[in-house]
Length: 204
Image (cartoon, rainbow, N blue to C red; front, side, top):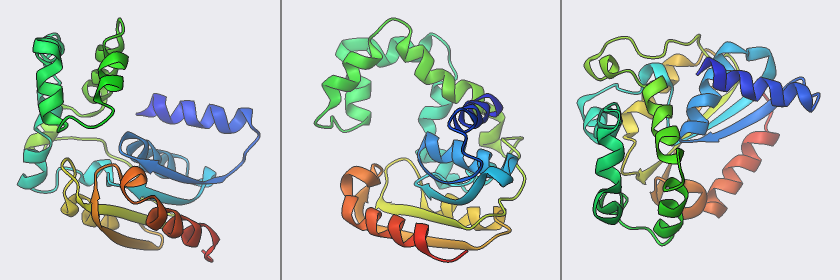
């Protein structure tokens, strides 16, 4: 995670951006939490979509159940073989065969791509985190934070987002979007855009 945050900081430095508002979804949200916690002077406000604070993510048994795949991904070689087997049958079933599944399969089937994707989990979600062990410990976030979760999310429970409020020492708000799945920007673009615009222009 420190390397991923370093990449973001390098981009900001290259663009000569001293501080900025940050919006992240899924892994982007996890990186956003880390960026805001480790480099608070660079983040003016943060909007976290779907994924709550990494230190509070496995807050209940339900989240551990939803995150079964993160533990499965730890098995190097085994996960790669199982996901590719029978024309990616497991991936198709797990993701409920979305409209653009063929594009996902094509991208992941490139040499090294699947392992690179799984390495995000291997490097940042240690198996001991599932049993309440050490996960990613980060400082509290001091900037204003808006956590957004959707009630149709198949991977992230509401409890982990609600628990994130305890990791924010600055202003914290929470918004539940109804009728949307995990991919909030695709499922509820207008509602999300309105939330984003309101959050960006409101006073700290």
